[in-house]
Image (cartoon, rainbow, N blue to C red; front, side, top):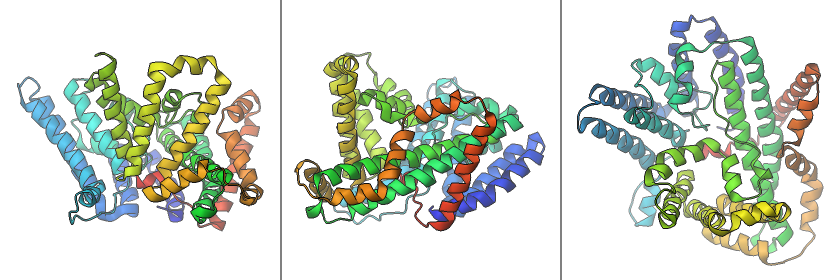
Length: 451
């Protein structure tokens, strides 16, 4: 989805909200399920059958777990069917071509269905929680379908567990207070994506298109900084939009970002970045493997598995695996020797964090390993030129705004203001600027849609 996705959303959303407000409570989940399928079909109609498979698969396996909960092996078999089915679909569409290229097999590279990395994790967590006895299996397939296909966060998260919205699926209340607060979050997310992510993204695109031999060291670092801001404001902006839409519909979705760029270590960064994914891997992979309960060696092995999978989850390419292993090494070093020192030296810890996070974003952004090697070389080659002046003169203002809004300073300032009308006016202005930008520009990529 690119420019037209937001235009469709603006056309779709008022109708959807009006219908949901007017529909009697007992039919709202049926309408929500239907509207979510329409929303998904608009963007990816040929893969809508996967949504039906996900709903049916996890509904009936969870029902099997519930019905035969005291049987010695049927619940485990139902769980395995769910896990194999979900991961099988994810593997087939996302990794089949990669495996084919790895072993020189003639396997097709398929178009990735929108949101499959997110909703397969959601449905798996549901079945696992039913098996563990943490949640009751949902008897109403329409209510369950509404959970799986919930359109605000269907395409790119946050990853919402069934236990987090089980009560609201049945008993949510649509109020003007929730609608107003949700609308503000939605508009803030829209502004983050359209005004910041899109503009700083053009800087990254301009830099990565330069001949690598002409790339100066300063320009290379500016490029990774631009990409880091683009992916943050793109993804956190979409998450805010999803959380805001959820609030308008009566749901409380979990927070997904908490100003990760103010971190002083990689450990802190991953407690603030894509929080729902980190929580998912911790609860469903790290802890079941033993977590930190079986000694240091086993803990390091568990971290290796988690970070290999985290990297591979982001994409079927070697650079994503390298990216995951890069963070595994840094997090392991922090846990073993560095974390206390970082806490004692806040200024140096921020320099350490900025240095390594920018290297990490270079690894994440460039899938061609040859180009990645050349780009990393340019970052440390100490090659000088005046080309960076061009990028500062053209993108310096948006770079400054990205730097400011990646911190919690604007939030603290707004909270200190006691005039609600002023906050509303500011949000309205951001909305108008965003719409003006959308009308005037066709550059509107959603980076996380491809993951």
